[in-house]
Length: 129
Image (tube, rainbow, N blue to C red; front, side, top):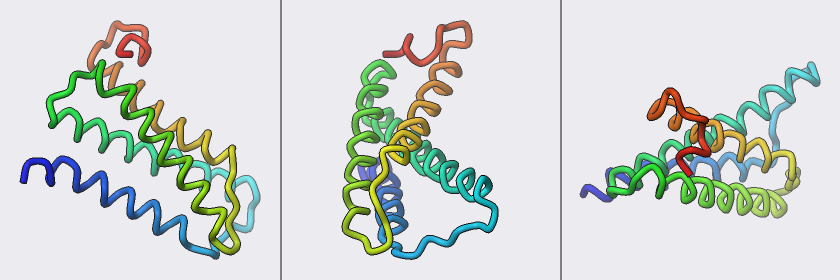
């Protein structure tokens, strides 16, 4: 039961991302810069939440921050990569390297914030790695 509570939210969030990526028609806002801001911000948000959930699951499994950070980054990257590949099969959607970079920035943002919370006087995320 403990593992389900740790990993269930991760799998649920991954399923939600997969469902969003399966939508063939993504609505656009009338203002181009606002549309880009919302969509790119959405990528950052979705993958920041995924990174936070992954970190939580591995924390509940007893891993240290030093062990969790590279795993979170690797799994987030691989899932984002698979998501872009998945979109190549969805009509009306295309894979995008820029989207992948926004996904990774969400994960990096979470890891950076966690490192700052754990060590307020540290040099940031890379002190955890």
